Length: 315
Image (cartoon, rainbow, N blue to C red; front, side):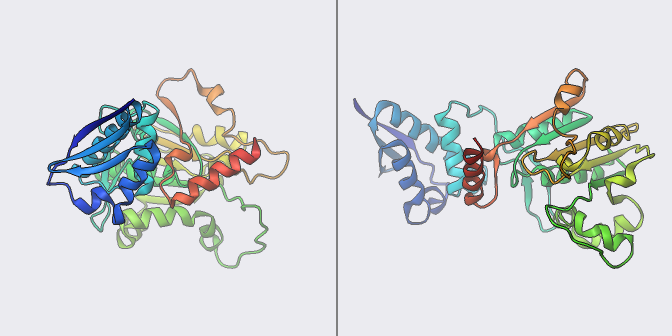
């Protein structure tokens, strides 16, 4: 049965942001929910089947709320909001959790429900495992939380760790000293660090040892007190290496372990230390496991489609 409803439109909301360039946002909602959208003075009229109108109206209301908070809404973000509404998973609270600002003044915050749960887990636990595909913000959000804790004097040091495993290639002999040899493996950590903290600040903190970036092998035998430790690309740790890393945690420290179990680069026959770790540690308090999916990808929208295509092909 055809019905219609009106969604109040706040004049304080930017018209271009709400409609989208060339009405792309409205066109997307019309196509997604099979409804007709038109403008009335001070409101947006939605016409269609009752259930479709309900979902479209709820999606538009959420978009308006998001814009009022100062968020931007592109097609990827719009699609995510509509997905949550359609699946009945849209939370009553604001899941755009603010973390910190970059040196250029850009606000870093969670952009999806999965990212929100990830940030909450890092706040409330000593050890957090985050497993998910590329582009879901696993490393970047962990880095932001580490810098936030460091600036608030909750920790005195940030330690960034990565296994030095080649991604399906043989790079051969690398010239230079130890730093020159391992830096290519650690470059993604530098990139995130420089983006959030600024290159000059990073170099200064690294020079005095407050920020350390090291290959996983250099963690053996150490105890890290008052530190925020991030183990990135943890799918490329062995069972023994994962155990070694987890037992480095000292007093007043937090650890975040990130990885994508669909991109393991270990030699054939080597078992990833990230697979099955939830079964080993499931009964220990203050350890959290967060699983992100292609719905949490915040890169170019095509990345979501690529990940989904690979998952479907594998199945």
